[in-house]
Length: 301
Image (cartoon, rainbow, N blue to C red):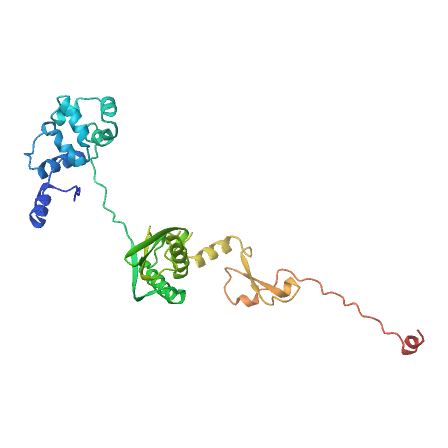
């Protein structure tokens, strides 16, 4: 394989001796890559312009393109480098995209940190091929729970299901509309992906769930971060605006009267909050009593 590293020559030599690999240096990734190709071909390391055009075979150049360049009398990279960018694009067509970056730039001077793709996998092998959902669903639920444990607070955005049937592999990938974090979400999406794969209803010998696009969600901290605590902030506001900061405590949610359903509690006051009085009190309603009529009058009517 090929790997780029931005390290000193001393450290590079230690790596070469420890792991038995070949190293090539350059002022850019493209230059180092060409030197490394020349080293793998058994060529003597020299100026880039002196390397033969056959070195481009390792970059994916077509043999027909190299033959056309040879017919024109070109033998080295330096001769091809004299061409302008427009000439390279016109003559080399698709192959120009590869060689222009090595001959004309832009050259990459820095090496980005390596970030391996993280994927979580859970797999189950059945003793016998299963057809019925009652044998398949508990396994899928078990795999979903195992993936939830592996996430460990992270979330994923893609789920791939792979089923093995008689030596064949049926797979499908589902992109979730919401971050995947719970076994319930994973189980539901795995069902949909299994239907997309076409393996549902077949004799499944093994099933495999894989999560990709894994990241750790970022949450906003408290608004009082690196300031006073909430209690101190309430005290500061109450001292400047006495009696203006309060909250309501529910007393009886079934009463139709607001002053009997909630009680305002002033914030920032020391002492028992139960002593605080309601902000207002409605006037008691006058009950409308029905006057009783004499029994003789009721009888006559």
